Image (cartoon, rainbow, N blue to C red):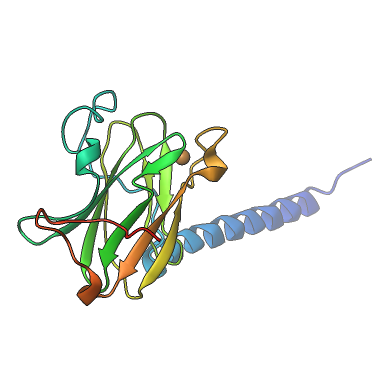
Length: 181
Ligand SMILES: [Cu+2]
């Protein structure tokens, strides 16, 4: 049976047009999500930290975790994400104030997102994930691990407690913790 060369060429052009349109649509959706809706892919600073020793020395020792108002007035929340918990499981931050999250992992790749906000970062062992944000509303925000990290992944979540500036009361060392419920 003879095949009409022109109809084959027409068919190929139609498929090519469909594929190029699909690719362009997906690319446009990515550009819109990142620029228009500020949904960004995993963002890490290029600061490194040794995952094998971060719990015994340096910035991420247990006593230094949680929220701290630094000497310059910057509010910093330091968190360690490990299989299968956040340490601490709740951080308190003041409303309508720039807050910096600094997060590190001693074991595998975890991910942090704060629901209802555009805070979203992977936490890759060896790097400090740094996220700057500002919370408009008070209340407890859910902060689950969003990177499958093992069998306990689904239990791995924490909270960010946003309180009014007047209710944010760091102690003499600049530290603030979530009040027991
Ligand atoms: Cu995890």
